[in-house]
Image (cartoon, rainbow, N blue to C red; front, side):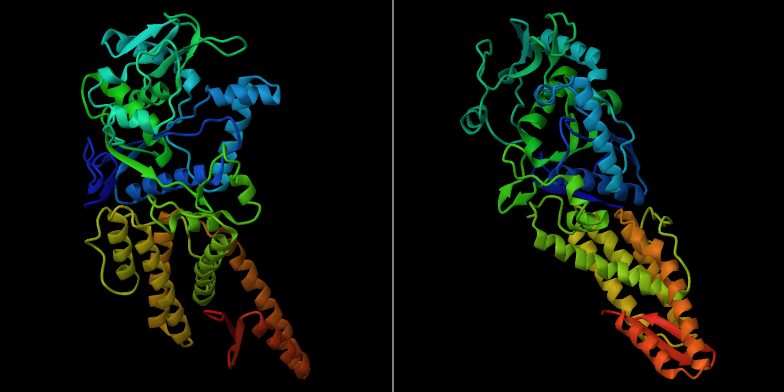
Length: 483
């Protein structure tokens, strides 16, 4: 088993390395719960959830941590706007985020720490950074000294001078270097605060993730993920804090960054006012269609969102759903979409029927989670399955067995990707029952010699994509394929 992943730190694809054989320690920067989350946020969370699922599918034991930032400038601003407390803001939008994640089929992380519940650990970490000469206190604030840490800039690949020239730097009279960043912010009037050796205040944003990730996962963390916009300064600062405090490296072995969603070639951003909220999207498209759009291209690309691309994704997804419904009808059974084989390796796979497609799927996913090639394998399987159904003869055990194997592999791949096919699977038995009832009405009409009525029923079914064949044993039906 050899999974290869693009590591942002070294700018190349390399074998996945873990601290413990068979186990992956994984951390993702979670939401700042100050508002509803947009689809760009959920694309990142869905992709990292899928990576977690695939690692589990390949036999790894994954410990997945995703934090909630529940104290930050944006939360304080939102509290002022809505006229409520910061705690009320975080309670409201944490619940909304949890609801949206569940609706989208994104599994909850194993551990979900909140910043406000780890203030004591953050204070201790800041004290340690001061003691080691990497931070300094000034007028109640504490700053990290970037020029004291030799490795600063290794993730973004830029020197301090390049960063200073290319980034907006927040001025502050007490900072020794323009790029020094806040570890502790002194209290302001009407803002939440906690006690500390430097006076009342609250932690800076960056120290939160360094402290919470290392508390639950230690060092090194095998995979640290997030959106590409977090690479600098947030992830750069996480590295500096964690490695400076520990006195060792690396903080993280494998850095993974998801591309940002584009709206007409412009990054989707709350500050630009061009966001599409996840909950608003779900009013127009089913969760599985959003998942299809998210996963159909590499996690590293910057996909363009539009109604047209979502409609295309809906049509492609419908082809998968229709195949499952048609195959279920042809096999006269309802497959269990929750059952997944989860192979540790692919040595036991054959070269015929579904296993050949499954082998392609695994090879694609092992290559930096190449979902485009994985989708191609699924589409080809669906094509083969449709041809098998078209060629099936009444009572043909060989074609039936082949179709069953194809459906099994289809469900194995798509369920590993997190697809649920809820509407298709839930309605399959109902559809079959309704069609059988209509055919009983047709049989009754034929027995009464009301052939015009019987022919009209058949014509209506044909127009709906349901083919009817009269046999000595009675009428048989199947869904037309590819229409």
